[in-house]
Length: 302
Image (cartoon, rainbow, N blue to C red; front, side, top):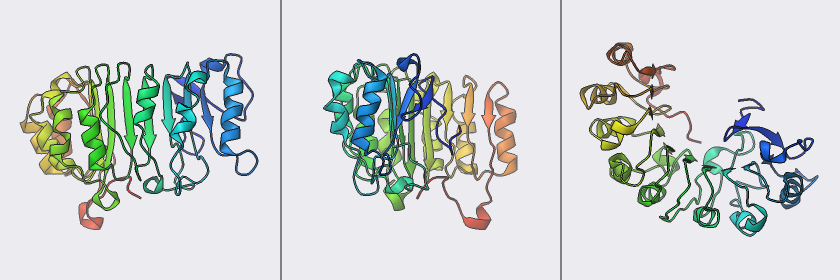
């Protein structure tokens, strides 16, 4: 990570900003575009990027600030309406916006379903922000990775993800957030995901930044999806001893490569038990928090 927390690489490609020199191979970079802050408006920047990216458009595209993300959702139709010029698109990140520009819970999004319907070859889809975010259940034959970053992911979006048919999805990361910012999804809303029904190839599951981390951990202790995972990520949430003990008492986790629990409210003894009881697993328990000082909180909310 660099550029004030922005990605250096995306979908395995180095990031190139729209106003930097055009690379020798435009398909070998992830193009990053944002509003020109009065110099060039967003649609003009988009057009310049398309010109520089070649006749099939970018392989990977990162959208930063599109002008007024706290007031207007990203114009999805700008992409869907130019689908014939985006034939190479395989990776898309909408909303890589810093907190200085717009807090994550203020970022407005709309219905992202048309992106999945219009780009059947898309393999990676990341979206940041959940104000107004919507998704309808859809089947997508090629999607390998879905990441929804929020300070409060709407329950209806979680249910829609769980109702999608994603036969090739390998990595799913949901930042569930807190109720105050709309993150009211329950374990029941996650049930199809935990059962593994919509994602037969899932090997990486991140249910991050969750106010209900202990409840999720209890459900995961017997969830069928766990046995096929390489990585289980419950970081940035409010996980405490009760959730950790449920994981330890539940189904075996020794097949995991990584168990990621950074930013947690476990006691030092419980955190160490996880490390000791899973010797073949890389257990991440950094950034321990003191509940007595501020109560429990997620890393990302506002």
